[in-house]
Image (tube, rainbow, N blue to C red; front, side, top):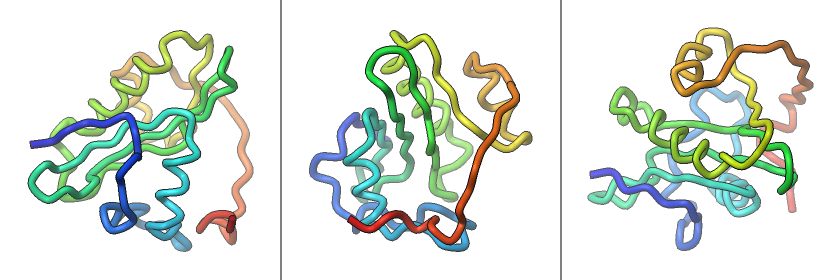
Length: 137
């Protein structure tokens, strides 16, 4: 059974194994926990049997007008069960008072987000892959 939580309180790095699949320089589980702790909004999916975090989504906001969703991920063994959709629905509900909610994604993921009411747009980005593992405290 999957349980959802809106707080990283009580989560340990050991519960955050296996994320950032395919990243050449991924954050460590310790850095991942810091990401969750410093995000304005978080929704976690936890496997109640194992205690493992199996999915998460984060948001950063200005607290007034705008929100950005930088990360959504579900562990490979848990994909195809609606967990990603549930994480996004819960996050969008948390952000329902904001004028703008933005995210960047690859083109092949746009249909997933479109099903949740989002629309494609044009944007710009800068990626420094040598810093992908995160900034040290």
